Length: 510
Picture (tube, rainbow, N blue to C red):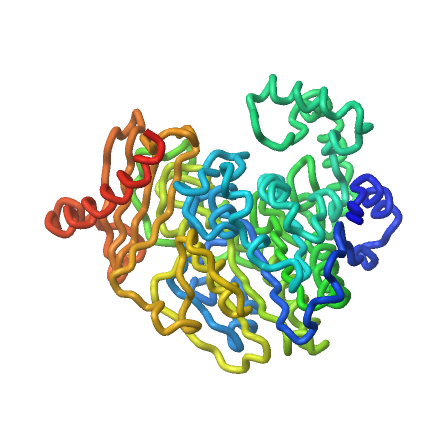
C-alpha cells in the first residue's frame, strides 16, 4: 500500500487550524517503519535560505545578529571556512542534496532539476528508508522543485503552501483533470520545459488577486510585522509556524528520522518582526569597495539600508531558531539527535550589487555558516579547514553508519575523519545560470579556493569575455587586493589547475 499525502486536504485542514496546531505528523509512505532501530540517532537538517556567514556574529560580524546561534554553537562544532556550491537556491541546494558540484548535477538555472541519473544520487536515497523515516519541507518554491524530483525517496514531503498563511499557487487548487492542460500552457508561455510547473501562468492572470491578499495580510498583522508579511507576494508565512511544525515532527516521527527543513528567511524581502525593527540604527559602516563591472544601479546609501534591513531580519530568524533550540534542549531531544545548521548561499551588499542573483562569487555570497551539534555534545569545537557543502552528504552518511557512494565529490568533514584536513584540497563554487545545462561551460563564473587563495574566473560574458581575480583570504578577507597580476606564478598555477578541471568536466558535453 502506498498512501499519498492529499495536498488540497492539507490546505483545507490548515485553514481550520491555529498556528499552534500546525505541527502534525505526516507520511506519504509507511513501509518499513516497524523495522527501524529507535536507538539510532536522528538527524535534523536545517537550512536557512540566503544566510551569509559574513553577517553572522558567531563568525565575528560587527553587529550582534545571532546571539541564539552563538548559544547553540557553544555545544557544537563550528566550521569557519565553509562554502556554498552555487550563489542562489537551485545550484546551492542541489549541491547540498547530491554531494556534487553544479557542473555535475547541472541544476544551475533558476528553476532547473538535476539531470537524469542524479535523481537517485541524493541524500534521501542514500539514507535507507528501511532504517530512517525521511521527510522534507521548504518554503522555497525553487527548492521544492528539487525535493519534488526526489519525492520517491521520502516518506513525507509537504508542499510550500502547507505552512503558509496566504497562498496563490493556483495550480494546486485546480481539479486534477485540468492541471495537465494548464501545465502545458505554462510551458508554452515560460519555456520551462522539463520543470515542475510554478503556476506562473495563473499568477500573470490573477496578479491583482495576489496583490490584494498580500496587502490585506500586511494590514491585518501590521502590529507584528510593520514592514509586511514574511515570504513572497504569492506565498506568505510566519516563521513561528514552521518552527512549531518542526518541533512537532521531532516529537512524533518514528525514530530514527532524517528531517530536511529548508526555510526562506532571511531571504528578501527583509521584513523583520516588530521587536527587531531598527535595532541596528548605528553608525557602523563596512569597508568601502570599488564598484564592480556587474554592478547594478544601487547607490552606497541604498546598499547600507538594505544591509541593515537584512541584518534585522537575521536577528528575527535567529530568535526563532533559538526558540526551537530551547524546546529541543528542555525536552531532552538533543540527547539522540544530530542538528545540522547551514545555508544554501549568502547575500551581497557591496561593489554596487545587492542580493545574490549576480555573476560574481565574492565571499559574502559563497561563505555560509555550518554548525553541527552531535547528540549530547557539551563542548564547542572550531574547525578552520576549508570545507564545502558537498561534504555534508558523505559526512552524514558516515556518522549514521551508512555506505558513502563513490560518485560524491565531497569528503567526510573533520573531526569525523582524520583524513579530512588536506591542505592541498581545492573546493569550488559555480555560477552558470545563462549556460545551457547540456553544453560545456562557456558562459560562467567559477571560484576555486585552495589554501588561503581564491581564484575567480569569469568567462563568456559580453562585459568581460575572460577575467580573473586572485585574493589571499587570510590577509585580505574582504577581497580588496587582486593579486592576479602581481603574483603571476601563483596565478598561473591556480589557473592551470582550474582549466584542467573544467576541461575534464566539459569533455562530457562536447
